[in-house]
Length: 379
Image: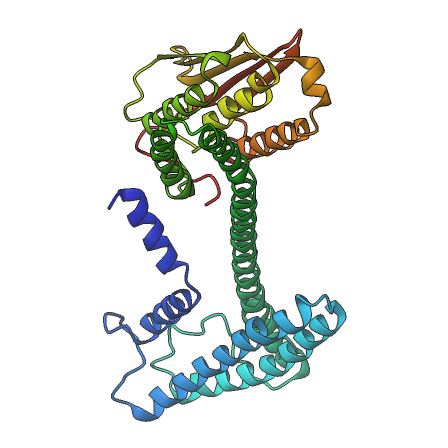
């Protein structure tokens, strides 16, 4: 397990709501019942122990009535007037109770409280000014700061929780969109290959069984490998060669496909079926519009200065026959699907250039390659 995974798991445990609450209260109780302190709440004094716990219960009710009820029911529901009125009334009531109870604790257990509640000055005379100053001190130095501190803690926690929920929702939406795009691309590819085998079977070609075998390899790749986010580049290249063999068997002298690979694909990963689509598109919407003399030139290389994969696919076509073919719309849909996939999988990390002029269709694709440490940008 890497250090990052250990750190993420540790932070996930520590940032848990219940973990944080337990840690806070353990810290408070340690300060109260710490046996290393000079002046402590003596546990052997049962009466004092109960009285101290009652004070903690008071703070418990004050804090959680706000963070667990008032904030979610009023503040987060944008009922601001009701929330601040409730906080005002609650603060006054708890100030009166805490002030009176603190004074009683200090008077009843003076030794144990010599260093506790030092911020509260017990009035010697019961005049209005002294009582006002005493309870104002309780309100502004204890009750309100506690409200502010724990309210901010609750709001910050909700902020990060909502952000994480939004990120998770965005990830799920992206994954659903990718699955939809794959579902649109894969049948497009499959139907074209089945049409090729169908044409061979009509001619009773002896190559039909070999085509079916190669198709089975392609289907295995499309059904299983393409479900992964990234696949080894050498597998993608193997499928390119298999597809080229299939189309060479079907079209024979009608086309010439040349593929040049100028890199070592070992250890490199790529999104599945990206390169395969462009080659299939070149054959379907390029060579099949020509009676003869068609070509497809494919180059796969790696830029040494940027470590980006460079894929280039050039084919010729008959513009007049292509424009008259109603299925030409499929090419536009397929290209839009692949472009969308690139935007989702390689955001800001790819460059796709498409040129269509003078009966030449050219695709230039640059994209980032990954090694074994694959990223997950939707995590």
